[in-house]
Image (cartoon, rainbow, N blue to C red; front, top):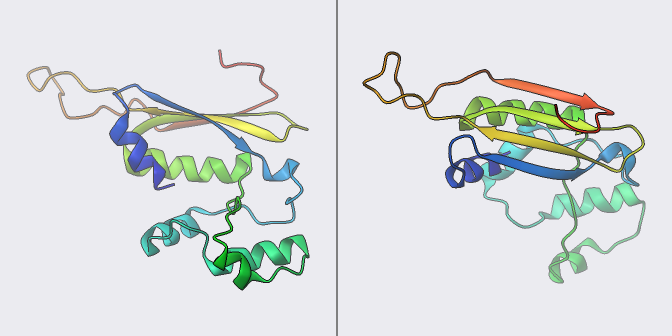
Length: 154
């Protein structure tokens, strides 16, 4: 979620972030819980940039393996530890739009696929201050759409 701040700083007004995301519901980890906005913000606040011990323990429990988590940490073992589905991503992108200066997002997914796509769009610049209603940004609408079984955006 906090990646939104990074993306916002690099995009021109009207720029888009397209992404393909593994769908938790179509993965072997489907027993895991999707990540929440709150958990992502907590990790960002803690300055977490490498998998913490608790993530590796959760992974071990999820996979029902008998990992020696301390050895994995010592080896700098890294795995995908954040899980998303279109529903959880809708909440996360909604917060990104609300907090980081994006105007809208689209999520494109289809049943029986192992991934989904999203497109996040940065707000357009407003008219110059001399024009009526000028300000630094104009929010066209904080819109989020979820497309199911859509071959393309129209």
